[in-house]
Length: 206
Ligand SMILES: [Fe+2]
Ligand SMILES: [Fe+2]
Image (cartoon, rainbow, N blue to C red; front, side):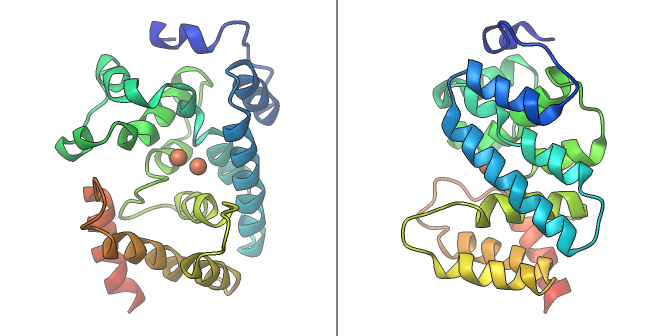
């Protein structure tokens, strides 16, 4: 394990039960807010996997691990990613937290010993989405957005839930990508993976 993670793994060891390990990991790092979000996303992702009658195991693992990098202070995320030789896109330098998905993927491998490529790639693109995503990546992406309990429900989230429940997951994803795209002038960064994925998805969905 890389030394950058020593401070986050003091007194931590793997039990083989990922849900238990993730709960312990966030507890020792005093991040119960992310733990709560993680468990909400995992429950929603499991529900969606069942809707599509697919084996939920990869989806559950990806969901449990997707935000583990939240234990790293946002202000240091870019520096930590650079120290770990994680490839950083020029655009990602504009916004520290943009690399949190790549950091979570790295930590899933390094701290939790995950080697399943589908799980790792789903974690790596859970905020930006990415072209040619697996079903695991699609479900994690959608569950991460629609499980948020935001005050005052947002119309795009209601519409996404309806699409998911109709088994139209690509349409649900595109609703979100369009929602981001429409705000592009106000945002610090619209990730190039999102831009490319949106262009591809428009061709498939319409
Ligand atoms: Fe995230
Ligand atoms: Fe999340």
